[in-house]
Image (cartoon, rainbow, N blue to C red):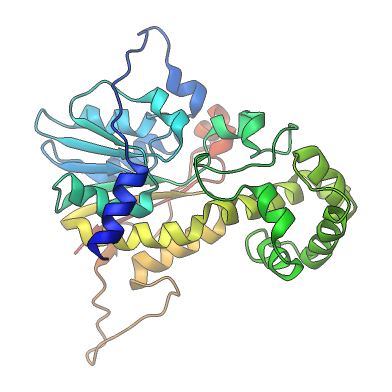
Length: 328
């Protein structure tokens, strides 16, 4: 990556963040997001007291607080989040450095802070409860509001922008590959026809347009798939995940841990393949002696999922899957 690219990415996305003071009786992060697989993911990191760790999905700060509780006075935690709303949850701890940026710039910011290697990295890839519960963010079909879906409201095209400008073929691909909708072509065709008379700007208008394509008996499931597909495209979620995983692997010290929580099969497949083979296609590359020589080794071959007790407390954790790997 050229110096010019690093310079531009740092100084157009980064801004210093003032520490916030919170009332001790109010756990504000719980209103934002309840972290999934909290104890399992922190245990998987095998935190060293004086280590350097990264939480690339700060959100409500739940995982970050647990990491900090395991660190000593010399330990450090870097927390990434591109959403301005996450800044309200910043923890007043001198060991914490908050970076308001997409985690695809992981190496850029570690270089900026003069960090060459890290002891562990955590990624909780799910959308925060806060995002689903804020109507104006456009992540949920439960409300009416702007059809936005951007994690970073400062840049990029919104879901409405994509719906109103992309070709019918491209829209069909998005709903098919990211939402696994078998009638993706029909959905795309209806949207293109609808936007000819009036731009689709709100959730209500979008739902009205695609309603004929949705099976009433599977309405919630299919709408969730459609919204997932749009959200993935808007935020380039799979592309940024690939970039982050490759950079994280380079930054990790030998023996360092990488813990990733996913919420749908597309993410989980990428993580599983990368941990196992070192690439995202899952292609095993062996040398003359049959050795794979991958940089990572999975801590457990079995994926970790929430207990029934956790799902009872936090139903949104039911689709969470945790995978942990260690740098060889």
